Length: 168
Image (tube, rainbow, N blue to C red; front, top):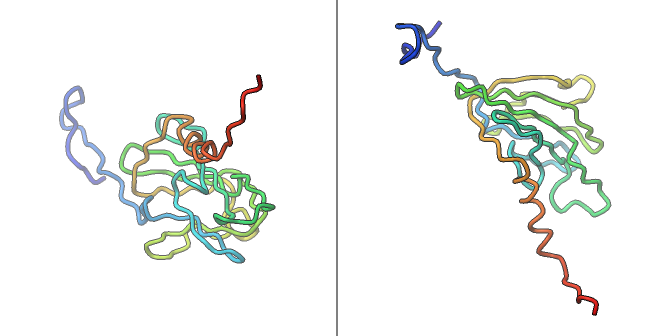
């Protein structure tokens, strides 16, 4: 066991303290890579193509939409194509779990954007990465309070509303 030091106040004297975990990938470098016919990447954070749900004190789910920004209006935007749970382990590491998703459009991979290494190929597809797959990576997360991500998505839409005269 590699030791980072000894325990402090309230612990047994000279009790070993585990060193922070070190893994080959960092959370900040990971991307969902959506394959042709419309290749693009999506960062593992809430934004235009990912919403945060099921937030707890140390974890949350990210629900991804694999259609590119500006997709035709007839394309279904459902935010259920790829679903990941991110859990902060408290030791500068995060465990990512592949949850149930329903990509009807194209295949996606989890890649390390710094090296272009495919970590999880063909999410949910035969011969690819199966539901329940897990990986632990370097990093930390700070879950947003419930509702913040949704409010961020709704504010731009609210600005488009046209005012209607009040009936007299």
